[in-house]
Image (cartoon, rainbow, N blue to C red; front, side, top):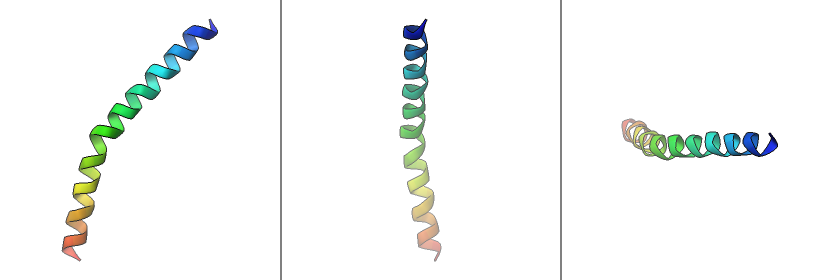
Length: 38
């Protein structure tokens, strides 16, 4: 049971990492645009 919970938490954190990795370039690009506007 504990092993399953550990695997599930690892999977969710892994998916979260992928989401962050995909979303970070978008954030950086929007921050650059905001900096250019200033």
